[in-house]
Image (tube, rainbow, N blue to C red; front, side, top):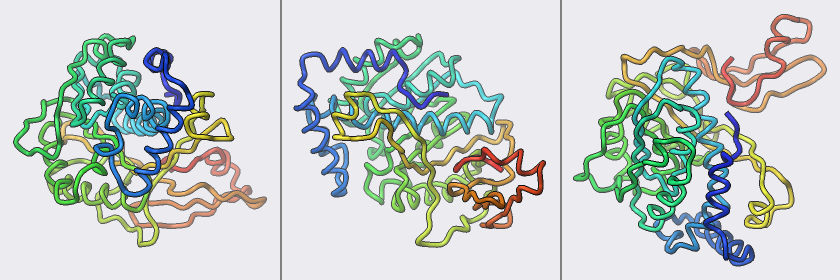
Length: 325
């Protein structure tokens, strides 16, 4: 699955940007970045249509790439899972729905919810131009994960991407429970690849395991995470930058590396192919071979793969950070 935005989404964003100067959008994007770096969230950063469009231009490509990477791994671990219904909770401009419709063409119904009216408006505008019928007909409605009285629509696949970071710590646990209660098959959580994002994922992981969830990825086991601070579990995906994307981010290179933490879990009836181990860092390559940092049943280990072991080296020479072992 490509890390690039689908052509239909790129075209829909371009049409939404018609009449907007790129300089003004770049200024808005820079302001968004300042707010996020200062610990703010989308509720304060995205207050009007121009801010939502700047977000779509500057942040949507990276968010899409991260969700696409997670769904690709989820698909490898649960290859027979073919959802018909999707709940995209905290959808923003609908990024995860676009990624899911690319990965799961059998989707027949998509529901997006978000607490932001401006994101809801943009998500609806973009979705109606999608190639996938379920995307074009998506139900896009207000919905706040922090409001415990609001029911979530039961769905085969539930995704909350870059959402828990928007909630107060006290609300995260209840939100995870509500997401799991709505999930009929697979639940996917994606957070920024920061220590704080990892801590939210780990807290959700413990709660979900206690509720009977089966881990799909990235963990190869359901025991306590063996990583010790200041280390944390995160991954990265590289995405190309369009000219407008580069202008919006004042970037000098034509690509971006998005770092993210994630968790994918399943209901007990979903067939799961267990990973033997997960590569937790970029492989260290030398003339002697590879050194891999792995998470496995026994814990964290540095494993050497010698070039002299032709079979093992051939199998692993192209392994990447985030791959299973």
